[in-house]
Image (tube, rainbow, N blue to C red):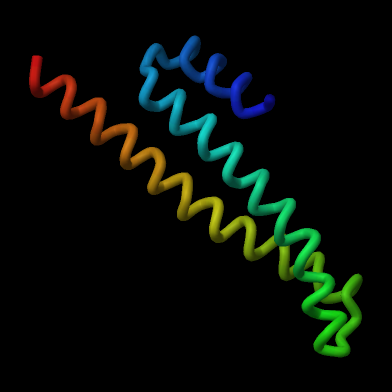
Length: 90
């Protein structure tokens, strides 16, 4: 739901559908990644006999931030490539 709202809002602000779709897709992917890692990593640390509460928070935050930035760069690169392709062809 939040991804759809972000897509509509980004399209309203930018007027470029490619960028708006990149923003919405990125938000959905990052939310899914955070949910999965937030529920799976504590089990992994528990299996390794480490305190899941102490280890999970910094690890999950750092991992999600790093991966989300990479995904954002990829999505915006694809969106800009499609936009430039459309501009050059006209």
